[in-house]
Image (cartoon, rainbow, N blue to C red; front, side, top):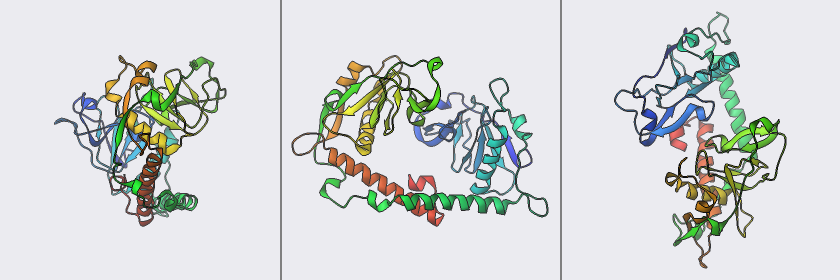
Length: 346
């Protein structure tokens, strides 16, 4: 890797992860979310804003491509790789796949992936007849895979079907919103404690009090009284007030409450609308002030209402379908024309 990339560790303010919220991704060590732990306004005078088209490799050897400007924490042992030669995103995405295959199981807390080890890291790459790295092949192969996936998804997903017909209900805002208690709208059910040593590996998602991976922290074989589906899981402990929609059968930790809409079968779009509304209250709660059952029931939320003053589930469904269709249409059209950049689509 040292032949292909300049390798450096971030420097600067060790408190950058406490920076004000903004648009720039902040990288830290981790296997999820492309290594992004949050989005910040700026990293301070001493922190470096890295240019787009770089690779990060954390202390465990996990590699991600970053096609956008970003900051990185200086205490997270994240190696930043900037190419010594002209490379595009397809070259680097091919290379990170080779890196992740090469380092699998090689690094841990006892043997971290230092900058020195990154530079000496050996990966296998295709070469041309002259023995040089075959960048043309890497790009054509990755473009081919991208086209295959885009065509696969667009053939099974009719974006137009996600766009409801124009109706008065799809105004930018409904005419009236009303205050409700969460306990008025939802039946709130508990999770059930399951110790790690009692888990057996399997295929059933186990939902814990996490803020990543849709709250899924493990996959287990057995179920218990908390097994549920088509439900909103809301953390009362851990990452307090984070919530995720679970359309699949899952087992829930005792740190997570299960919320079912009362008097309505609920659907993906209603629960995603509710997730956003509930998350607006997140700043009130923390590890020392938990989102307990009683507080959750008495928490006030603001919802659109119909002519009878009841929650307008039809509006919520249509509005979220409209947003999903709009974003998917823009994303796939951009991918097909090769003009996609995340900031343009999302």
